Length: 556
Ligand SMILES: Cc1ncc(C[n+]2csc(CCOP(=O)(O)OP(=O)(O)O)c2C)c(N)n1
Ligand SMILES: [Mg+2]
Image 1: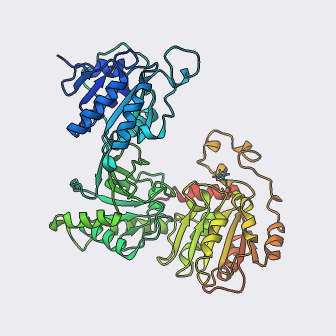
Image 2 (image 1 turned 90 degrees about the horizontal axis):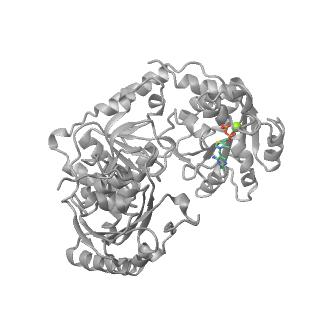
Image 3 (image 1 turned 90 degrees about the vertical axis):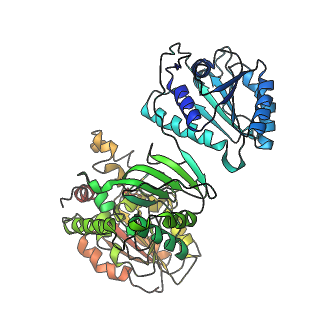
């Protein structure tokens, strides 16, 4: 019989991914709400179908079938109370780690609680009936399509992960009656490899490592990464939260954020490690492999993730370094040379920038004392400093976990307590500063803390030339509410000075390039002085914006 599938894309994607993940056994209970799935797979010879009227019995049948065959078994039922009867069998599967996939079927989630027939709420099942539960809506936009693909891959992978176990998918339907689709569309498949699994081949081409927020690399991890880079001619793309300081470090933001297209952004395979980055580095990978001991599916590059390696990074890099074809190994790393050239070319053509966070970064980053630590406030401060490298012995951090402006000063304070002989620098905006300024009164603060506060009297972030507010033509209206201008003394020359001095800080301020340069040397004194320092710098939002626009439009 010829296969023909529903036009409902979420069901098509589920079926395509069941095939790709080699899941073929399905036990179907009768009903209408599961029509998109059942109406599609009953013609497809790939699937091995069974029928059971009683859903409770179906779930226990699935346990027996999964236990004995060692394969995942899918359950499909309709709305009403049908899925409630899966609970006992799914509980059995949970505590025996059996790969049973319950696909329950629902109308649009908005119908829950509206007094409609057969609609029960399946959004919060009990903890011990499945390892994960995902809600799969109908697909209307590319965001839906991406998110449904990620959720379905995640759910299907979970069936066999960490010894296996049951999973729940709640599939929405609109009862579409059109089953005219003759072949399933291609859909992205994500795989997972654990430490003892066979490793997939790494295709030849341009290979890069992208390090999101990561604790400083240990010497052994650096060695493993360097061996990998040597073997594949790869480089490590870093920003100020990456933590890697080895031989193959590339700091690409100044180049990759240029408005003009940069062919160098293209990477064939990007190995993604670490957590949330300061930015995506604007790279354009064809394929992403994520390596992380957490083994989770994370797809910040949207639709590019193909493999998740659930293992220590060191193991991954050492294994692939050994697997590399001998002929590829060469002492010349062309990518590294290319990136270094591009960075030098770009730096050479930076025009005179107005007095701004970016200008300060340009004239300070490379001069930070060896061995010190730098903390950057999120968004504008981190972005500004991300254009410029710091000395390799300087460790840099950004609160990218939650991207809050609320704790940048406290995080710096906390870090500074670990080694009071080590200088800890911070750069934050005025809103971030005033939000978290009580941290400066903390009695544990030491003289090794030096904070730079760029006071532009508002959230300049929202007035940057490329911000959606400005692009919406709202530039003259952004100040009072969107950018919270005019609070905290409206760039008062005295307010912060009094606070800082009364707390025992050495305070200085600057409102021009000349004034800044006058104080820079003192602020960067390489040894710990007798007091912590606070350097307040007054800039204008318009200059912050112009500086960013200029630095993103370099011609080289
Ligand atoms: C806790 C929290 N509230 C609000 C935001 C949204 N937000 C992001 S950047 C920003 C403005 C920060 O202003 P400022 O610290 O003065 O830096 P500037 O953009 O002016 O350099 C705000 C409010 C956030 N990230 N975190
Ligand atoms: Mg500000």
